[in-house]
Amino acid sequence: MDVKELIEKLDLKVLCGESLDRKVTGCYCGDLLSWVMSRAQEGDVWLTVMGNINSVGVAVLADVACIVLTENAALDADALNRAKQNDVIILQTEKNSYQIAAAISKLI
Image 1 (cartoon, rainbow, N blue to C red):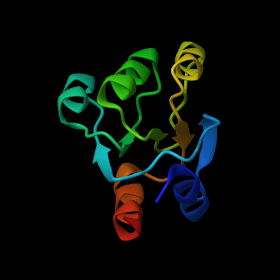
Image 2: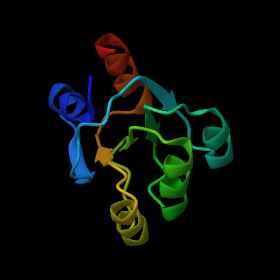
Image 3: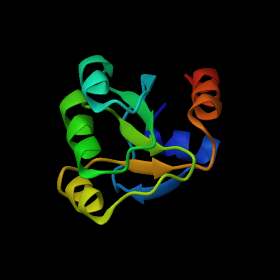
Image 4: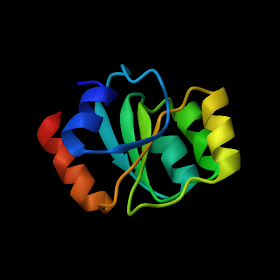
């Protein structure tokens, strides 16, 4: 499955990202950035409410497939600019992390 298919099946909103063909291989939930940085895997969908510039840095270091901001968490302007510079896909949903993680687990 790729990010584009994930967006379509879960009705996610694209906040940033043009190349949506990144392969999705797993899912990681977490908001403590240092924890995510050391545990998220390449290709994971990262579920979080942290829409700041530091989250984009962690996404790049962990090489996640995309970030999904749950519960309609906001993405700040600095994070959006950094995400564009680093080709980080950022999506948004009104659902909570549990609901989206459960839906993702059915898909992958």
